[in-house]
Amino acid sequence: MKARVAVTLKSGVLDPQGKAIENALRSMGIEGVTSVRQGKIFDIEMKNTDAGTARKALTDAADKLLANTVIENYTVDLVE
Image (cartoon, rainbow, N blue to C red; front, side, top):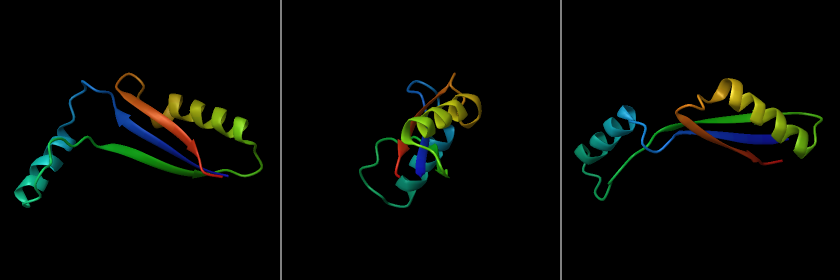
């Protein structure tokens, strides 16, 4: 089973890296960029597990390791 855990900053949390990317895109002449927020993607493969067990394990992993839940949100998507 394959899964993707996407971690993003909560709204209202300052994102200096996203702001730097936004400014760089504008300096490159890319028009229409109004905001950039950066995040992290974890592509994870698991074996011998059902969807419910995988989702629970990955949620636990995100809560304990992959995301700082004080300032970040995350989503767990199973690809299978």
